[in-house]
Length: 193
View (tube, rainbow, N blue to C red):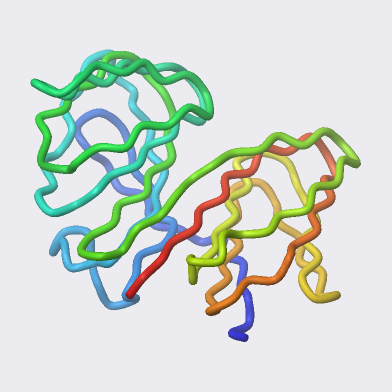
C-alpha cells in the first residue's frame, strides 16, 4: 500500500470567467495546457453570468456544483440545471455554455481512464464509513468545508477545509470518517489502466 497523503498547496490560475485551481493531475509530469493527462481534478469559480466552456476534444468531463447554481447548455445535446452537489457528465468537445455563477468541482479523464464524484454532508460529531468501489485504484477526498478525522487501518489523518486526501492503491480499505465540525466532503474515485 502506498502511503496516503494530504495536499493543501494548489496552483490557481485565471480563465475568462473566473479562476481555476488544479488540485491533482496524473501522471505527475503531465499538464492541462498540453492535454497529456490521464486525469485531472480541479475546482473553479464562475463569476460571470454567461460563459463558454473551453473545447477539450478527447476529454470526458464530470462537474459538480459546490455552491451557487448554473444551467449548462450542451448545444444539440441537452440543457441541465445544477444546484449544489448535483453533477453532470459530458464530452469535452461538446459546445457548452453556462448561465449562472458558482463554485464547482471538476474531474477530467482521457483514454480508458474513468471516474466518479459524489458528495456527503456530515454534521458535527457525525461518523461515516466509506468503502470505495473495488474497480477504482485512486481515491480522493476533498474537504470543501469543515474538518474531519479519517481512520485508515488505525492511522488517523486530519483533513481540514480546502485540503485533499490522496490514496493510490490497488484495493482500498474501509475508511472511518468522523466530523469535528459540520463538513462537506467530495469523494472522487478514479480507475486508470
